[in-house]
Length: 593
Image 1 (tube, rainbow, N blue to C red):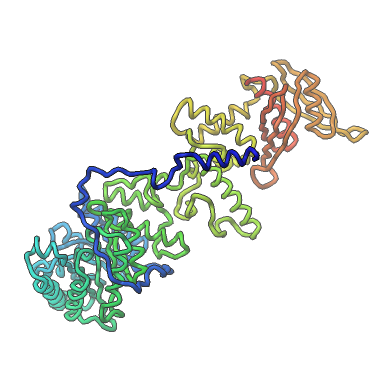
Image 2: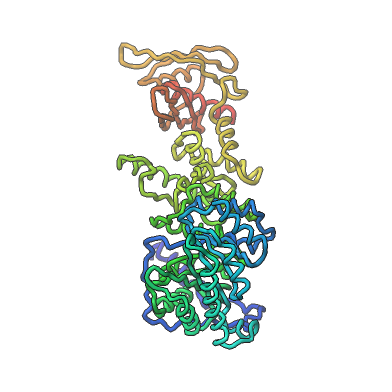
């Protein structure tokens, strides 16, 4: 038996392999028996799992109502107006602006939007009301003169609310919704003029916990009053008011309702997920696949408890799949700054698409893959004959191009003790147009690693550049190193070899170096041998740092100096001088180190 075979057999025959039987979780002390599994939906022919989202849904922003109600410090009128203007600028066409019957502040804000002409003709504002006559009347009064407006009426329909909160029967709770709808129609007719295009939305609140047959019954009763038809839409909103089921069950419930509602072609089926289980985005996406026409939520998931659906997340998820979200997220940082100002709450650093660190990698292997991805993208775009920003996106660890949402590449890679050569090399290439050879990347990354290990924390791009300059690019009067190159002149000899004369300062003394070889690099190595410097060139690379006749050249030379292998770097408008400077850099590093 060969040695590899014996090692393999010994490994396989180890007495305690890791399997499901040997990894045993222990029971927790938590009272999980107090909770029950969520009821599933009998929908054996469900269709949503095979659906693909190919176009954006209708969007409703509820930042100014649902989001504002959840704030520690509710928005002032000025902050509300700034949020409204942001939503309009981003392209939202349906915006829930308040609960005007809840207090004077919300009422006055709705009136200010109308009276100041702040509502574009193609934007529909929405206002929320409970199903009480005096509240409906007050709500309608807030909308007088609005170009387009929707009244959103809701009442809770779930069994716990019927039993504990209302102490009412199914029929009585249904009647609240039916009577409320009738009152909305009566007061719209009485108060609103012909200048207002008027719409209606109804929510069986706590839909996620409401029996499906009963939710359907209530919605049908509401529609019997509203009478949706050609040119007369009704919006039926089916919320996960408190998210308690897995997203697939919510999708089943949406599909069941979509398939069983009458007059479906005249219904805008709206999804309003919350995020209590952390799956609000998934619930919204599966709801769209299951037949929802509209999605309701807030920028960055603002809202009570764990928040509402994050409209930014869903919109940019679509964008990342090549679907136009029909909302402008191209300046994500300005959107975030405005939302943070209006809400007086920060967007977390790890928030999808918008957080400070979401396009940033510290891990060395990730950084290396990202750098290679950018290099490949540039090469593929050049081969296709167009710019990088016209080329299909594809870079490891970056689901979208940060520049598409207004970010630069500066923060894509940040260096700390977990970083490797790829991250350091990326910073130098992105910020200083230096494309280090692979072995030099390894050498320099070890220098940076030693710095992070010694000092801890992150190393900024400015610090990386400072270390690089000190290590490879000393100024002519640098305090370390044996040689400072002043000038060099190359001549061709009769035998075809190159003769080189260089003026330099060696160990503080002005010195003329002369040598010959089969090229200027070889001639310079010969000249250095004349002053006792043993140097051999092992590898060489160069590139231009920019385009045009005045472009700087960067040269990288791997040298064996007195038996030590080190890299040197030189930069100059002349490629020969750049290569000679690179050799001097390696020689000086050997002396200094």
